[in-house]
Image (tube, rainbow, N blue to C red):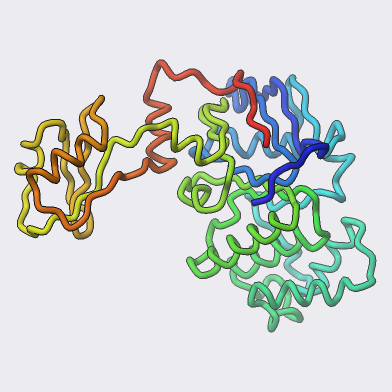
Amino acid sequence: MCQGGVGLTDAIRISDLHKSFGEKQAVRGMELVVPAGSLHGFIGPNGAGKTTTIRMIMSIIFPDRGELSVLGKKSAIESKDRIGYLPEERGVYKKMKVLPFIKYMAKLKGVTDQGLHMRATDWLERVGLGEVAAKKCEELSKGMQQKVQFIASVIHKPELLILDEPFSGLDPVNMRLLRDLIREINDSGTTIIFSTHVMAQAEQLCDNIVMIHNGQKVLDDPLDRIRSRFDPKALLLEPMDRNLNEAQLTSIAGVELANRVDTGWEIVLEDGLAPSEAIARIASQIETARIEVKRPSLEDIFIQIVQDDSYVPASGMQEVAS
């Protein structure tokens, strides 16, 4: 994925951002730097503060206190024609026909007529909607409307693209299509923020992960660095003996739990036991077809963080810039 280069302005800078709704603190002390050209994933459960943060970035709502800049300006309003936004709440002009709707949205972002028709038609073909250009938006399925709205968010070739739950409601084939398009757009130099509560989606797509919990940033690092910081505590074992049982595995020193998965077992290790030592112990007692370390998923890491009372939220950490 693209990363911000030397001399490029950070796409987004946030300092000590706060937002409350009544007694509910939606965002607390948010600190964030998004380098130009990066692909950042905002992850966390529903209600964590992701969408509220995005709406403040977009100047849809305003913070109670704190500072932010977007594409070098004090608000997104000053940079609106350089930003693409797919909100969590979907919406198209239902009575408009698909192609005129896309062209209209492009014109709102300052795109001239020259080449626009061809560009919009090409995008419809790329997402498999070439045959619906003359249909009214209300005649399309929700998934089709979502792809039309995605096109509307990128048709003007934005410098910054913000996608809030972009895969919601899509089938696996269209999820993969959209994922490939997002990577392609990022590779062209566009900065992308991708927000989701489905952490596996961010794991497949993003280079840098921002975890948000209870309105606070609890983690902000490149994906590979996150994985290296959280030691794996499980192994995946495929034994030669298909009749191997749980008791045989848990009797091995250092094995805390053994759970059946697919064609083998997931083995949870006791704290402090190195995976390499555990592998050696198991291999000496069990004839194995395959044994390997199970890397923690983002979901595993998130649960570990929120359950660790001693974990310090990342709000005050120095940001990682490329």
